[in-house]
Image (tube, rainbow, N blue to C red; front, side, top):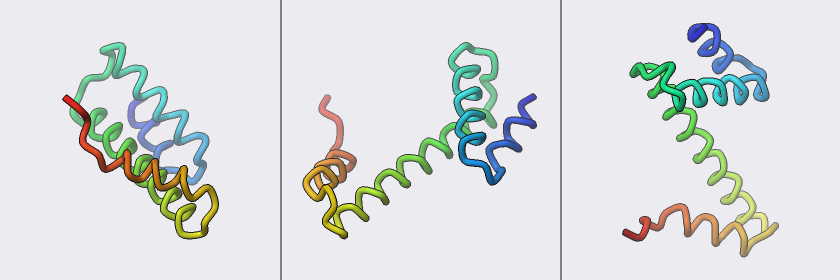
Length: 83
């Protein structure tokens, strides 16, 4: 089952890949799959999704659409959390 979900993540269909990621994340949260490969796959996708979101914010900032919102989101992404 894990191999099937990993294959879905590498496929062309974005909606299917995000659904497979949701299943992997939920099974990890429920302590079903706690192996290193699952953790690495979830981490890589989380990093990709954050990078894609920041890229869209940069595009919005560059093109002037929703400039203030994009600037605030970019700045908050690079601020360290308050401890």
